[in-house]
Length: 222
Image (cartoon, rainbow, N blue to C red; front, side, top):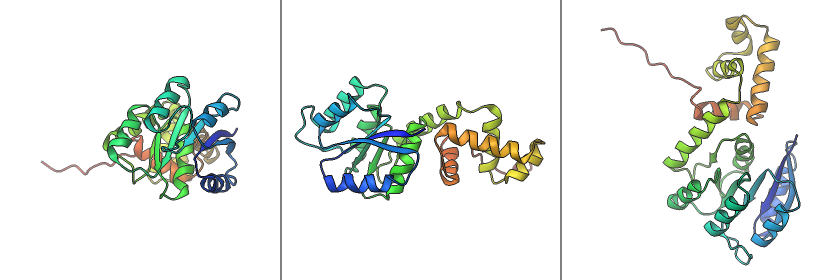
């Protein structure tokens, strides 16, 4: 199963660069590209789209840009997940976008790996804000959405993920839970599929944000 994307930016060279970077990710499919809001709406009416990756400032379209466009898209396509890919790093603007239900705001100066991680995270039902755009409210929203995604997992899958990110190996988890290592490996992979996660590094990040990583403070003698 592939995640269908629409990419929107008024700079063709940037669109070409993003398409090139994403072309090697087998879980992603760029269903179309747009240069303004008119083309975005036209595309969404005829191609399958799970996530729209759009610039914030794109003048010239029939439906405007910025908050005006994002508000319109949230009303017309309430199920559409949106990632804003922009040069804006103003915390107040990021907060306004978060209030609209925007799942991710990324800065164009960030490594493209953030965009790839954001797409998978947003598709799984969580939020992803890059280090240069993160606000406290966004971080809180991110945590709430991560908790929602955890509820997709069975109790055994969540248990395996929790033990794995706490530092135990597959063999150690199998020994502790009295299951075969094949069973533990299968449950870990099943959990990652449900969360839209492919790499262990992203699993660790997700688990941290969802509160699955618990640090136990040593008890003091009284």
